[in-house]
Length: 435
Image (cartoon, rainbow, N blue to C red; front, side, top):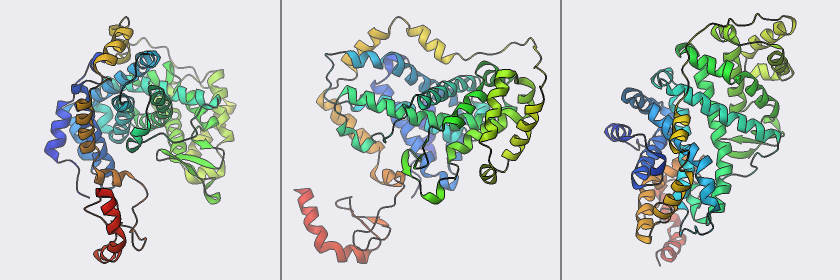
């Protein structure tokens, strides 16, 4: 399939992105920006196999818009924590549609998905500037939540609704449940982003390194994820590509993508020279890290040979006491986005909730129709088909379909002959649909 966006379109979308106030969430201006980010995200996903996601990355880097993305994501996160719970408790709030409310909830997931694509590249981490600190803090919040929910058995066991199932979400409480389920998906994406940041740690500031190792003790957080493995339901199911999937018997010992990311992040944070000089291998940290030896089996190392170095390091750590890091007096940057948003709106949460309930999340029928029309343009049918991992099948012979019926847009065929052969059966169905 051809690119969803032309270069000029994508550049225009990215250039128009701007930081917004918490009160603006859900507004017409916000919704337009959400559309742009959704289209950019789908462009990156659909063309990833051809390495054309670099085209989106290059634009974000050259236009200096990665900090804007990080701000929009954390703004939505703050809204979900501070304003959304108030909206859910308002008894007199019964909107005709929860579509826009769901779009706001989903906005955070869209941005972290886009960041997962572009932060793979070293240039993106460098171009993010000071916002990398905010991104590290964001990832820490999500991973500690993921580890905590795994320990308490609160990991969702079913898949969330998709955009095509929005009509089934009929109440604010339904949206709240979907938000809880979406939080798991977002946390898993945050793991990818953190892994990529650790890949490029040498090119980032000492403040980023200190934030991960000293402030948040990220290695110990990752140990918790290795122990509890929240993306596995025993050996029977694994969370892969946004869905829980049954694991075949012969694949039960295979590492998932998320397993590999945890191990690679640990490898970076424990073995890179700058990290070893900065990290405090005190008794507590040492005890936690040595737990990893029980998971570094030959089967795991056969799949990730680099982990052999980690196993050797842990063997040495077990019989030695590394020197404590030097307490150098340095000026460190601190993340600002979350604190600035919370400080600016600390006494306005209820006022913002009431304003949005009245002016944003209770649209008229004409506004709903306009939003639905714009949504249909954003989630083009051809685009959505490419996002589905299972390829459509020919309605006549069952092989992989190559072309869609131009009239009903629902049936697929592998060639013209199959379409003509299937027409006597398909024609009555089209008549019923059109009537």
